[in-house]
Length: 169
Image 1 (cartoon, rainbow, N blue to C red):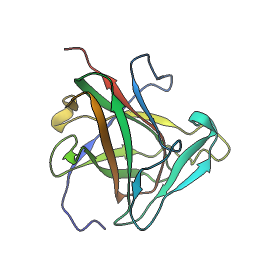
Image 2 (cartoon, rainbow, N blue to C red):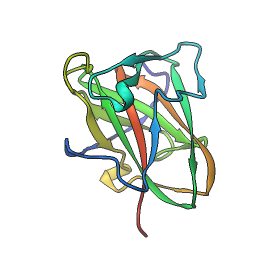
Image 3 (cartoon, one colour):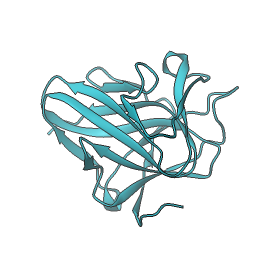
Image 4 (cartoon, rainbow, N blue to C red):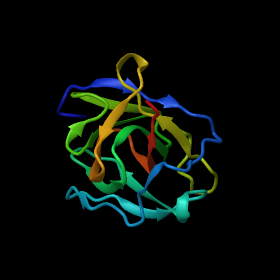
């Protein structure tokens, strides 16, 4: 149970054939892996149909988080996509980019489970992070180095990749 009260913001499920595009910033969760983690660590594990064959798994308890660094070559507006899998009905995560809550202050992102952990079948699902009332969840980023933090709120989840997709103005 989370010690905080969050505004729960459901993600938007994306089509199964969603793919990484030219220009996307891809954060492969297992390679090179998190740059920082809570004392309770996640695990890199082999998973069916994951990018590179492995994924970041076992973010499944209170006060557990991981951070990944990424670079943008140019300033711009981006949306966040998440490719994850879980046998849990619902997964909730607090997300920050460069310590800024994303999509909004005091929110937790909610994703539906996928009925599997990708142990023997491809159970991955893509989700688009949106803002309150389903409005696009967008963030302005300067060119340079950034940090994405993914923190447990509820439900266990495996994460294959995060994608920051440029959004045309």
